[in-house]
Amino acid sequence: MDAPLGNADPLRAEARAGSPAPLPVTLLTGFLGSGKTTLLNHLVRSLPRTAILMNEFGEVALDHQLLQKMQGPMALLSGGCVCCTISGSLSPTLKNLWMARQKGDIPAFERVIIETTGVADPVPVLDNLLHDNWVRARFRLDGVVTTVDAQFGEDQLDAHFEAVKQVAVADRLLLTKTDLAAPERIAALRERLAALNPAADVVTVTRGELDPAAIQNLGLWNAATKSLEVARWLKQQRYRPAGASPAIGKTQRALHDARIQAFSVVLATPLDRYGLQSALGMLTSFRAENLLRFKAIVNLEGDAQPLVLHGVQHVLYPEVRLDAWPDADRRSRFVFIVRDLEPGFVEKLLADFTGAARSQAEPDAQAIP
Image (cartoon, rainbow, N blue to C red; front, side, top):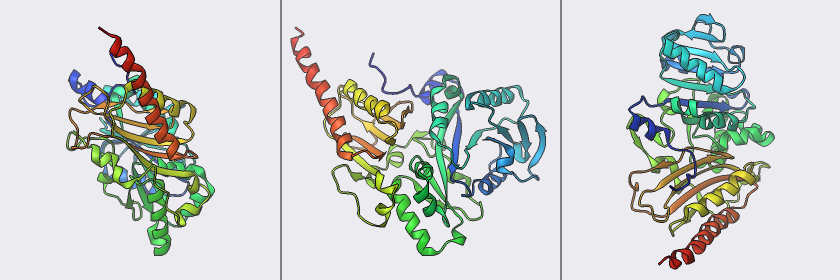
């Protein structure tokens, strides 16, 4: 059996076993003062049966009118929602929450929102969600949502790499406080966000009000259509090719931004599985701090079905094998967001490792009678 490039896909496993699909989890991040609290208060009212996880109740200050009952680390909210403080590691908190749901001690919530602190690195949370087998069988990451302050966002991106990283790993960006910022400042920030994370759509949030659909079905799997939407998720056309020169302009002059590059790599020849495994292993093991995010649809040698891969730094998402190619293009397509890592180096690493592995295997294959 071929060695996996990542973990097995839990959605497919659950479907085969006839078990309920894992509950969707949204990771809500954003720099200090960017409007997460106001947004959460609105989402609690408009998304019934949601579990909200946070570090401390006091940090988020949910509207007291929503609180119905306190039970230690949990608070029952109106509309069938529940609020829970993260106690130590995320995994025990999710397990306790799940068991309370199964026992009927709390409402049967249908989704989870995890709110991080303003200066938090989202990667450890992703690691927890994707590498704990018990948690992964019951919860699935639906997407990373990052709030960005239209008034002070550019200053925060200039001063804090944490803010840049929160933007880079996002599936969707929520632009807040646009009523307080000048139009030209908003336009410059939008241009900058598009350079840092080309695939993330930007949605304007007015005083915390947001259509809940804007934060749902952001990953590869769309629960609404019950399908895998590769083109929508990959958005390769938004990335410049690895060999193209980066755009020179306002978005490239900021200190942190100049170190961030978003680009695509397209390889026409089917890839050797073990060569690709070695190349990605090198990136995620030795260049994890430089590899902010990558996505790919891959044509593996000798395999008619394409493979979908996804990673954030050292964290590899479960690999997904598609039933068929989503379009007529059979080339392997990668998109990367990196820091202090040359696109040419990444492109050459992928080509060299897969090519070398193929060349090494060919003489062995010819020697077999």
